[in-house]
Image 1 (tube, rainbow, N blue to C red):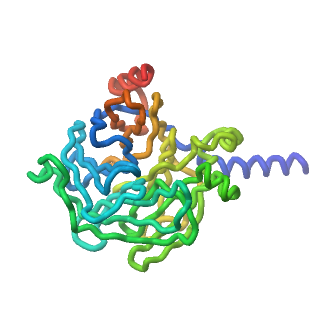
Image 2: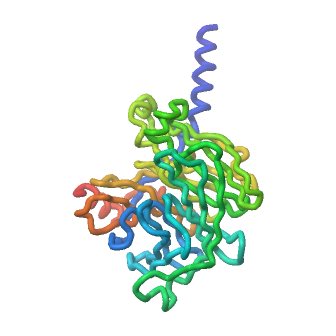
Image 3: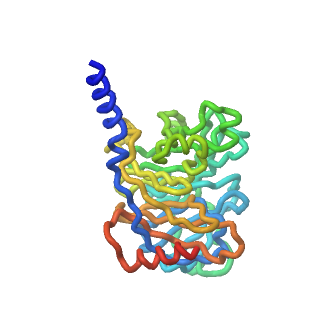
Length: 337
């Protein structure tokens, strides 16, 4: 009887952890471009255009203005855009999708950071995608935009967040909180939890729909509890098809499948399907992440506060097996950095 119970316990443990154990380990990395830090110093949000081929949009963290920047896949900066009349308390993430208030595609910039846990409200700016190749964009200075809309939400409780997605079929935002040091001190019961909030811009409703155990991102969960910083949720992106999303931590991208239709998180599995390895180098921190057009690769933009680093690097990571020349070149670069 005791042997039977042990077998059942082992089976349950396997079934609970099997999806994570069977998840793909995606680590085929290439360096795509070098980008000057002149305008992009601490990038916390990244999006890939669907209209303009090979064009990326990015924004800096708190301390910068209410602006965002366009750059090409080759690293060339295309233009700077300012939200006339808006503020940047703490821009932390960017998502891309159909506009809610107009035709075409929009950038959704999340003013969602709250490091001091001193507010419960947050703002998401809806910005119709501008033309990064316009004559005005090529001139020095910023292109001032006035056609933006503002969505405000009240979480009713203080949370810090650096991760936001807009799901095009649900027409809703999904916010993933960051359990950081101050969170543990004020709310120790939330340590290791990333809460998921559904934000409905039409009804102005906020709904907490669950949480993720961020300790499961590491193989050694006991070690993760002692040093949970490596499992901080620092960004998010949703695939162009809306069938999956990815969360970035300081070391990995954690990918989950989504339900089809207008209720993507119902049902929602706690077990991830893929785990993307991020580059390791001195001063590295990844907060900006987005999917490629085909949804099979991700782009991540390095963030480094070291003054000696004159460039940020755009990396492409996928689940490709085997070795390629570009991957070997990246490994050599990583070794020396």
